[in-house]
Length: 372
Ligand code: SF4
Image: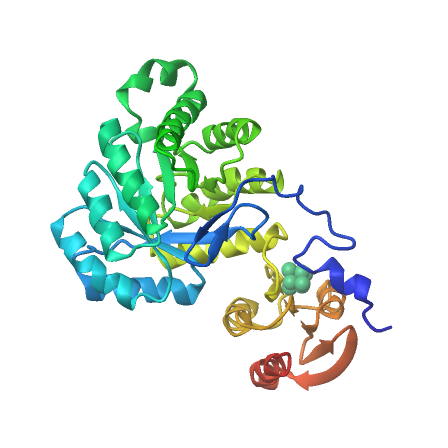
């Protein structure tokens, strides 16, 4: 029996037939950042941040390009000193993805970043300073047509929220955001995105849920200081997947103490697992066990790399033996199920070839090319 459309959809990343979908995206107002729409029904976008010294334009551009290649749709750079501000025009001119300037403490850096041509500002209400400074930033951002993210962070809340923070940490994050939004609105500025970040996933979930219930401002989700590669991904996904499944969240950043390219990979994997990333291939790979007949681990890694730019929800299964192998391989667009000496190759649900094990890698990689 050939694979039906329904079977195929079972594996699609779109939450279509047979697969439970996330709740509908929450209705938020839309903000556009140099062609990347955030909120208002736009696909959830993926962001990351450079960890180079921004003053080192060459190193920063290298990292921006690596992040863009990995799929980052927006890249944030810190603008923390005069060297960074001086390098920014070159970085903006040569970057291949819209840039967000991350501003703390010094509002003049925001003005310099706007002049340099960044696509978005992130300001921290805990340290941006007086209303007068916020006003200057808001007016300049409006002049440049540049949206602002009000990025509230538990670690840098203004001291006026200390008491509330003791009794209601999520409420303190929300109140800080609302106060800053109100200040911006008073200056006529409404092209805003909000983030409510804490290093505690549960606090992030609560704050973002409560904010979503009272505001249509689009949300940038993130668990701040989430940790190292494995722990950081787990903590980030623990919070964000809950919110995204509820329809909350318009753009995301997974923050890792690791190469930022890993942040982008993890973000896309999470979105794909939730059915929120369409049009990309998915690799099904068995975890291997004592029955395994081929090197699934390295083969699956190679397949994943090759499949990265395959079109439209292709599913490729790399299965190590005949227990679950034929079933998963048949359900995929392309699948292998390894036996003792030979490997079965399935295409769109049908046994297509039975090859010698030693030919597997070459044949599999060639078959992937045929899926393009
Ligand atoms: S498919 Fe086979 S090798 Fe892979 S985990 Fe299952 S039983 Fe083990």
